[in-house]
Image 1 (tube, rainbow, N blue to C red):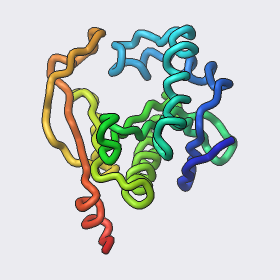
Image 2 (image 1 turned 30 degrees about the vertical axis):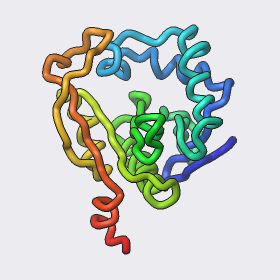
Image 3 (image 1 turned 90 degrees about the horizontal axis):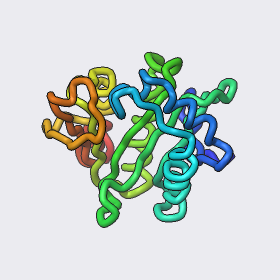
Image 4 (image 1 turned 135 degrees about the vertical axis):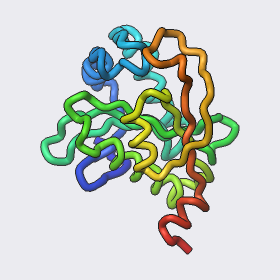
Length: 189
């Protein structure tokens, strides 16, 4: 297991080809997919031929960035994933933060814990200048995670979603945090 980051309760590791079933199960929960696809599950074929190969390709293209399987350190249970990847392939110092957790992991602080750790690693080890993230305006739980991870509201925008998602008519929100803002909040000199 190639662990890239540990927090108090989580280990973030590289995905492997053996993780197909974990990803299929995660994306099969309509509540997990509610604000992503309107509850429509991701097919096994999509996971095997599109998503997992894309996740694995990040490790070759961008050292230190990509999609990470999140597992509980106590017991090793898969709780979901985080991504921390260049928002634009031309600007690797601006990265996008994202996460998707199993329903039984919700409300335990894992999303905030993993997000904070990735933000810190980005600013201290990876040369990141700015972290960005977005979610639907109506996705209050995800917005709280971003705020608790230190990101700040930037704007509301309207994305063109391929699925009908409850509340998407209200738009999406962008959150961001710069290295200088993070350093000021953490008294880093």
